[in-house]
Length: 224
Image (cartoon, rainbow, N blue to C red; front, top):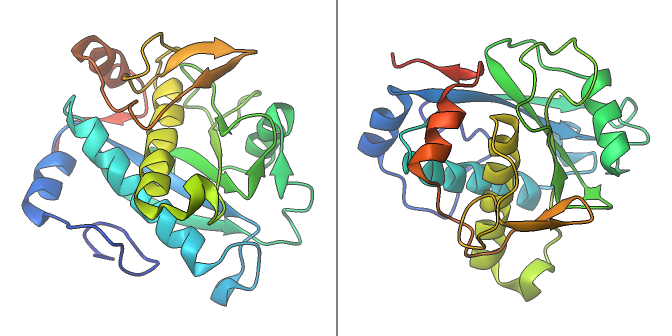
């Protein structure tokens, strides 16, 4: 699982199909650099084992959602920002999320940066619509997402993990060019309230037209 799926933080509680995964990642795909903001080796920072397994599960759910439109999640580059350098980013709002992506970026130019923080105070996450592939440009150059606490969804792990996967897929889809939607069954959710989209456990569908838009983004990798 570590070498093929990229899940370096231990097993996840999902059935994994090697055949399906290989078919997906050899087609049109995206690579992700996943930052743990305030992490330390041996979980000495702001993240624990539960958090990292939930992030891996969210990525696996995102892989299933994107498979609807023939987009795989190929490579996972894992990085962390030590707590001493992450000061001020334990909890962020939209503006601070932009600051975070301007201050830090992954060295892998072929991947979209995804920053996990403990709390986003004014949304579940933030991402630019049709974001830049130049990580040195000004503005929000990545997606910033919060790790939900264990009490989210009243301890229902399946729903909590599903929501985490939908949130990740939603924010990455914004970066790949999709605006907010008007359908609670679609990945892009319902009409934004105060600038924040509403997504639900039912927000799992991606249309063919949306897939075409996503595939045109510069972070999308061709089949290999």
